[in-house]
Image (tube, rainbow, N blue to C red; front, side):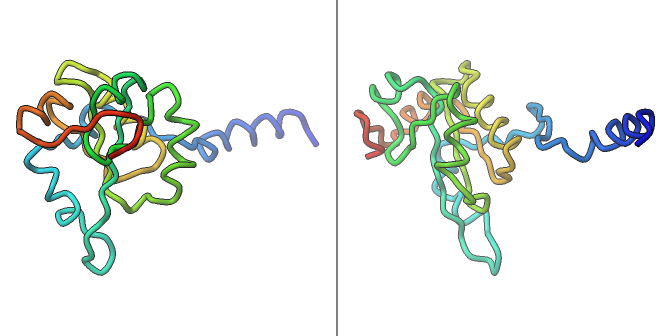
Length: 147
């Protein structure tokens, strides 16, 4: 095959092999602690059925064990690419809530963007992080278990 033709085919096929989409802060959907309970009912799946809500804590394991939202899965940001797809699998139809430590913590928004890039569409970021959650008198548990 002609090397120039082969090179042209390769260059023209590059847009077709892109597997991730880029994200920005405009792609984030922020929710307050009091809105979290409504996520499953607000985000309807096929046939109008409520979706399951999965809570992701992207903070380091030590912070997760010191206190996390009840039911949250520990998924530290550095391991998210390797862990998200095996743990969440094809749960692309679930609502996913992500949070950091507080409003200044970049981990929550960064993890939300990463999940969006991995193809999860119903990703929400908790406004104010765990600190906002506790200020709203919502339950927090400690330890390795999601609780």
